[in-house]
Length: 301
Image 1: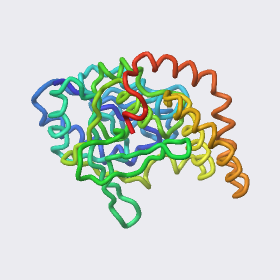
Image 2: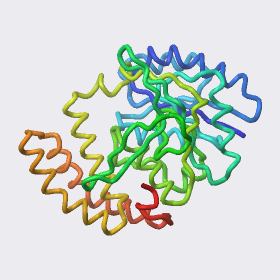
Image 3: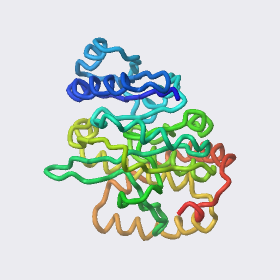
Image 4: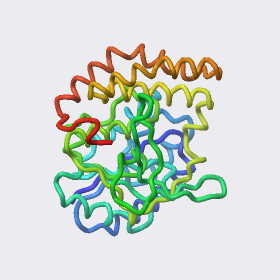
């Protein structure tokens, strides 16, 4: 089984110094097919590109900063492997993580498999990687799930494996979510509604140094919050096709607006406005995706 590892990078020079030698060593020991590492640089301002030229990897460079979805899509488009493994620069896999992931792809209906994410958060290590969710008050509310089961609502775009043929059929990550957040939940949800399987593999372990990632270094907490709100709206307007789910979303909106105004949550109001501006594009992408859906929202959640 041929595999491609795709790594989106923005100012990850120090992280790449640590992760690339480890990845190359892991691939040296893989004997069941061809391998490649593809790095897509999202217009970094550090010396990431100079560093990458020292290694046996394919390098693609964005002319301007595009965001996560666009950068990953570019890398996956270039990938030759049957299975594409997405790893963020702040993610460091254990040496045997590949075998546990790839075993699941013997089932042709499996689209994606997520890793056990040992997330280093301050002085704690939180086990992540399995996601749960529920529709509440008109939105999809997602949360961390316990890691003792293999079902999951989504596979992380920062530490997961994806079957490329299905990725292409689903049109990959939706670039409306750029620069970040919700794009992997969106893709996984669309895959589930199209009848494919999403799994979590607790034996495939990676370490995730969250605090060293690029998002917090480039964006203020207000910007991050606004983008997160915007993308929550995009997700609902794009994916909720059950009529009662749609109705409940709009019936709950006055409550959410009133709550935001009372607590002075400008980010929520701005996030809605930014999503509303994108509404024609959201409708267009939604109509395209719905052609593949064979399941209803209530069957997924």
